[in-house]
Length: 168
Image (cartoon, rainbow, N blue to C red; front, side, top):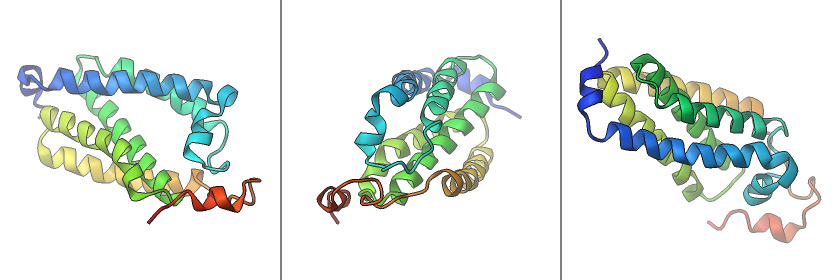
């Protein structure tokens, strides 16, 4: 049974979802503008590892998630949290696949934690943890399908900029 009374009485539920949604609106706008600006691809130095269509699609989804995050329905909020966890686990795996420093996964990893915390406020912990594991499996699969790391020389970058990707 869903713990909706607990979620409604928990003083952290709304602020956590608000933090998620503010970040998703901002990142959604970046994703929608990516084909015109190239700011994400250049910042992440992904050398075209992600398909070009991914960024605006992800931006659209993030804006929808930010809005749905305030539905009163526990099922809608839990499904939203599952998407948040899966998407951001994919972000951690994306940075790892590109050989970025391990600390680059902290940003998206924080949203996995927030999604898990909100899910625990609305469902039993075993259900939230099981959902998290299912989301991880989907994230691994989607990362293998979508992320195709390319060498810097293949993308027309110098060897010097390729060495700057990872410092450890």
